[in-house]
Amino acid sequence: MKTSQLDFRELLSFNPQGGVIRFLGQRAYLVDATAQGLQRKEFIDAFGPEMVRTIVTRSAYAHGWRVADTVKTELPEVWAEAKEGKLGPMLCALYGFGEIVSSRRTDGLGDEPLVETVLKDSFEAEQHLMLAGGSDEAVCWRYTAFASGYVSRVQGREVYFIEDSCRAKGDDYCRIKGRYLEQWGDEIKPYLPYYQTKNVESICAELRRKLQATEKRLKHYQRDMAFLHNECEESNCYPVSRSSVMQKVLDFARLLAEVDSSVLITGESGVGKERMALQIHSRSPRSGKPFLAVNCGALTETLLDSELFGHARGAFTGADRDRIGLFEAAAGGTLFLDEVGEVSPSMQVKLLRALQEREIRRVGESQPRKIDVRIISATNRNLQDAVANGGFRQDLFYRLKVIELHIPPLRERTEDILPLARCILNALAKVMGKNVTGFSHQAADNLLCYEWPGNIRELQNAIEYALVLCRSNQIDAEDLPAEVRNSLFRPTAVSGIRSLEAIERDYILSVLAVQGNNKARTAEKLEISLATLYRKLREYGMMDR
Image 1 (cartoon, rainbow, N blue to C red):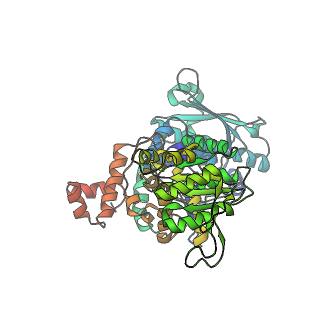
Image 2: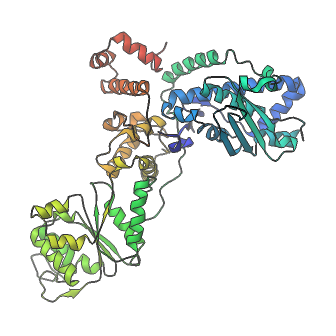
Image 3: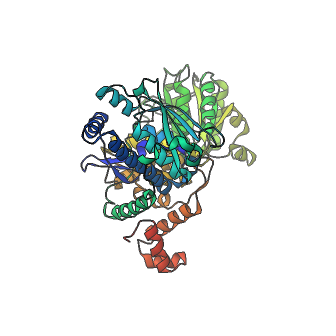
């Protein structure tokens, strides 16, 4: 998963009944800005600004360091982008420091700062103005120290930020600049006493070990929840799509909706061909008329004949009354012929006549009837090969394929997997009456790694399966079907390149799950010693130290 794919609601989790809130698996709590502002004012009145600033600075620095450390551990695939400065502003916004209106990053060489960030509506400046009035000095202590700790951990060397513009001083905005320690020179000396950084890394390492051990005891609390809004529009349109390749298909579909030509939609089973046909119809001048669909491969030739063309009373046994077919019922609208490649040779002749003459005959009648209907057909077969082999009429093929629209499989547009999954989850959760609102980032990774040979239909089935097993308000990796849960990572331009260490971790844990948590069998299958397996599981926080 890349930074652009992150939905921070999926990194947050909480159990409404249990009162436990987590960010990336680490327990957190909420406090409103006014309460924090009042607390800060009370402390300043009691202990003086220097002591309070020191406490706030040290704790915020450790907080920023810890957040970066958690990202490195839990989201190694976005760690490289964190080093490029893409994640920091998003995290600051997530924690409510304020709106980042400008963030500039350089290589930190020369006179240029490594990072320069402009913050709008800083909660610290806001609270200071409200509770204490204006200030002669910058007051965003927590924000500045958080940024220092976070960037220091990301860069692997000491980075400190100084706030040179603050709304509490009467400036238009709050701005912080970060440089490496050695680049600040004497300018940083007045600020260093507020930091005591020598033991931060060792404290964080010890804290991480304790939290990993706690994870085992708190496993029933599902992690990394998100309250996801419904990304799927309540309409007849094709499901949400974020990939450029699918956007081109949808743009093409919008052009097709403006004309009345016959369209052949091709693509693998489960990619949503009928939904695409409905999209074209709903945007066309025929949208006010019926959209009717028939699966040509699901009916016998006799039934399909009657279904499409209708029949007269007495035409065959059981025909006790006249019945119109879909060609007539869809008058003025669109008729969708799904799996058209499965129709028999004799039915192909009848279809060809209907398309050429724009008229049909009901079964048992000799009088032709004019029709006004647009034909959209679909197939997962290669009809050109069928034409070459004599299995499909060439003249009918070209009647159906005035324009071809191909829908790529889901594995070729992995950017769409998570938006589609969220859309499907939202809809199914409502139908099933389950309060499940998102995926953990581990489950999201599994969804991205899987090939999805059954495309959107298989994705829907997998999410329905996971909803049945899910016992909390999120879907975790353990709830997914085995083939999805145990899928190996596939590096793509979307999902990024993961470290070998991360891939090894996922593979070992997958094999352990397949072996029913039997560590001896797992070690045997992996061809490693049992001691090595235990050591790695301890490193992963899966065993008490």
